[in-house]
Image 1 (cartoon, rainbow, N blue to C red):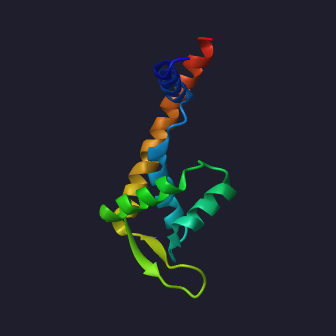
Image 2: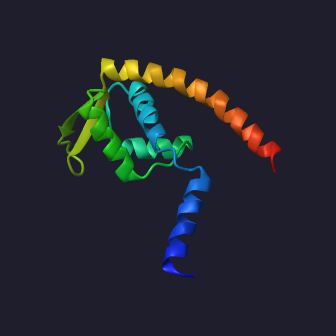
Image 3: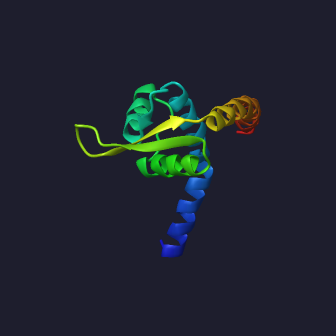
Length: 126
């Protein structure tokens, strides 16, 4: 198979897989921080998500999303130079983040209804 054909196949596989839910990492991070008001760092988030068996985000995506949320004042972070291991950035939810999470909750409920309808349509078309 030619390199261009291989590239097209990869694009089609990604587009048809439906697994690209990277924007869902934002509400997941906000909800996680809302449930942990003492603050959490990215590694703890990844461990908790794995235990909860929700989305499986890439670590780089988690840290990128946390930086973005911090830039948008949805979370605030500080460096923790704790006694164990390397310094870690610990994040806490802000009031703006709480408001954003409430909007996400409403939006996700609406999306869930629409996604269910599309899934039913797709299943009926096989």
